[in-house]
Length: 237
Image 1 (tube, helix red, strand yellow):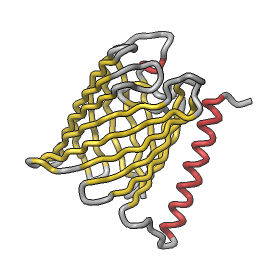
Image 2 (spheres, rainbow, N blue to C red; image 1 turned 90 degrees about the horizontal axis):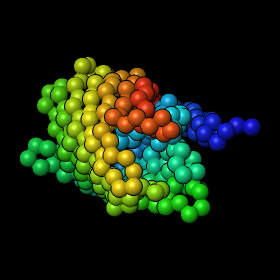
Image 3 (tube, one colour; image 1 turned 180 degrees about the horizontal axis):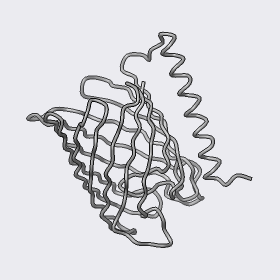
Image 4 (cartoon, rainbow, N blue to C red; image 1 turned 45 degrees about the vertical axis):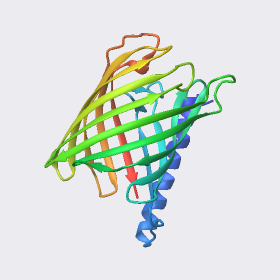
């Protein structure tokens, strides 16, 4: 009998393959999504967010549907594989605003997350608020991100996450980025995390990302803080 993480990975991988084939077939047939809509699907060897693993080191896959309501407003819905409080899935709905101010690109959004079928009694819903400020000059790019939640999923209470990221476009198809962030949280471990890696455009719609992640936490009983090299593939259309 398959373990739950293995079953989740197998099901999600099958979904990614199926949707990828559908996307290729649709593009060959001249089909296009309605105006304003976009879809992204992908899979990776580990689901990393804020420098730590959300799948305890297991592979995962995800899907995102975006709708751009205007030049500055958008709505997004997503599902991703996790290993959290007995849940194998996490869903999210997000509303965002993307103005430009003094040459800087802003992305301000509010998201609500849900764990699907967690252990009974688990805190399975959470609000998360994000502010991104970014700018690109030639091949160089930079971004500062701030995230805050009044009450995170599961037993974790409020948290804040601040991250700085630098990037460099080596070629039109190859970009390298490095980031470092700090998370302060109630009822859980405070830590600093970082990552460095490259993203390569295999095709105009298909990217491969290979990245090294690590934190300053050493907890043998909890491998989500361990360092890892993570590979992800992403298809957008």
